[in-house]
Image (cartoon, rainbow, N blue to C red; front, side, top):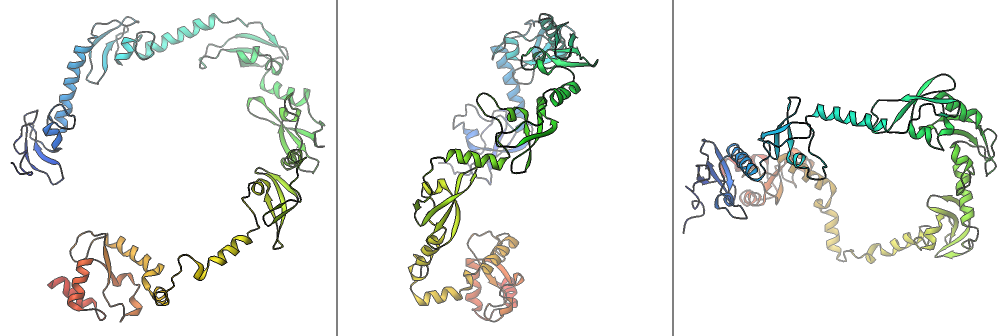
Length: 458
């Protein structure tokens, strides 16, 4: 039986190269291509295992060229589209080096590439590709003009403010038909067909200035009373889609902006009540008309009165058995998520402290050792992280990376107390090198000179 390091040496590759030797990386082998380039590949690519049907051809450059030629041969055998005519009068000339693409000639004389699905009308396409990009754009523009000619002729159509449609706009706006119109003030403006013919939009006819005047003056809301007792003061500005904003004053004295549609309301929704806070209080009072939570007791809390209405629901003033008053959300009371003002948690923590705590150490000697153990302090753990980052997890003696390691003090821990947490006095050593050092030089009175002697002579 051949050795694992030599079992594939000399095996020939698909392109004429061969395997030289085992690589340093596991399962990989050094090979030489027929072009002279060296490369590494996995053993399964050489032995044709794990579903691979053929042996590796050669280096990356030679393999890619080999695959291209194989793909073009297969494509020619499968779909020979050479000579197929396009809709615009062009034809397919030859197969391209790019996979699944064909070189075509347009009726205008330009050459372009296109995919097989565009020629064979696959994947949702209804017709064969027309030609090059410029010819396709021209054809789409002609189609768009023909579609517009078949549209309803609105020339001479009149709508509000004595506006009249003049002619169709020939520009391309993503399929939407636009018309040039003349306003009653004499200005010419462009408008969408839906804006002209729609029943809700035709009342806002005219140029932009006339529409603003119409919303500000004709349908003025100044003096309109709100449901909560406030009123509309003045027109503010025009928003998107010609929505008008109005300045309002609530009965509490606050000023706010609101949309015209929100102020007037609809059949399903009533008009605006007031500012945000007054509206929330009103909604809360409507939701809690038949509320029976006031006076009830939830754990240690007794509900006194309503506080306000927030996004989380109605909030209440509650009094705890300890004497404190606190605002609590009603939903938390009903679901029993909160049973006190916070004093119950403090009492539970007191009962769990000291010897009653589950992690309490009952041995007094062990507790004293934990208190005076420097390795349990945050200063020690921070120093350990800084030393590992500085030395890059490599031992200063053997130079190897180790995850299990010790911090060695050049000047001893017991003798030099001022240098205990000095990063320049600490180095990274693996466990075996650290034990070897102390077995030779002992513990307690070590110095930096001893460590230099250990590096040179051991």
